[in-house]
Length: 417
Length: 165
Image (cartoon, each protein chain N blue to C red):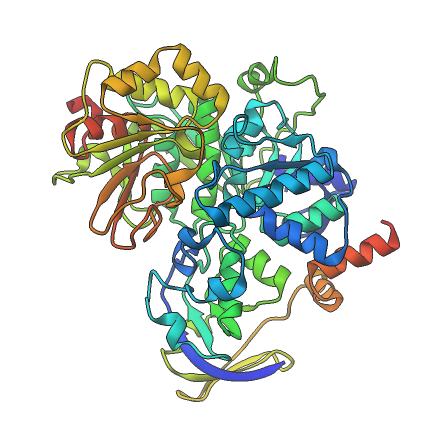
């Protein structure tokens, strides 16, 4: 059996050939955490009296409850800030510079192909879009990586998803991943690599690829990954001078191959309370009224997402009784959207635009749902209570469907707007 | 390790947002987290649960976020161990890394709410006294065993630091 891109990256790092199922201790290129997960790691390091081994391989990004939502979260952000200052950690972004970690790190050119990356955040798998092995871990793993520069892994087997054909209008990366999770279920790739390939993927820009890999964890996967190509190299130009190595999977390296006809992937909506409850928006025959629409998050808060939303919202106004919250994922995206005039389109449409934060995606702040309320969201999870009250309802969709639904006041196919 | 306890039974895909809702993530104090454990699936759970009780669940237990607050909340609530058909991978790592015993076993399908069960890790067995049935449980991989013997991941880090690896 050949080796997958993920297995090749791990092999190269430990200097020994690996196969699926092996337990290895591997040197990592980057370990990062946020204001929710890093404080626990920082306290553990203090408790055990251990200092960072190599601060150049650490990144700290306050994004979940930053700008501070309350006193308790202010203390968490302060803990991260003090640690970053004490050890002079360069890859630290405070309010005013920060953004959502999984949008900020690629944007800043910190992620390159062939790296091993761990993040104390489940959506760390996002970074596989650049051909890195990136996997979410917990705070203790982060503390261990800060202390030793290493992490332990069970080498994953690979499920290869091959997409062919042109996506229908208004479909994008979000629809590919929601459709795929709908097919295999929320534990369909448990402990495994989801490798995304095929001409459909090759035709996608980096934003869509990041969206796809972002939600690999929602199928239980250890990582999502896309082989680097011209799109990847163009994305990296101007962002980094770092040398990187591109790995490609051997043809016979997957334990399972799933072929998907992308021409059939219409815009999807995942019904409460699991991301696997996805179906084509065109197949929704009842009226699902919404109270709130959210466009943002590490899944769909990037520039191309905002442009798609603006195309729908231009010259239109959201329905009476609907709240539309738009959150650009990073400062750079925020500025670009402002310069392009998207803010005017959003504000004219009746939306509110916030500073970069994870905010409402995880029911943190900036748009919590009341009991009985329904939201459509471009984020990644629709679990019970995810965006607020355990008696609220979250539907997941792409930015076009979300923006169109905000205009209609109920969930709608953008084609029918 | 051998212990007995009362079972709290849950279904498939018990996610980290119901184990410990994000609105409490502005704290990492185990006691505060424990007072809200499982709140969004059973509001009274933290009041009903007693030290030594055992959670039994279906597939993909702990799916969702990487928050270590989830196993911290379960452990601090006094739960001795979680038995599930399968675990989400980050929850699996987190539990082991911080010393919450978790066991993957098909026994989870047959054990009922409020059954009294005994777990014997040396013998590798789960026994349900209420229905009178036993199941074998698998051994931990050697590597994980080594970390357990070191006393968890951070103690292992301390050991590596001492060896100056």
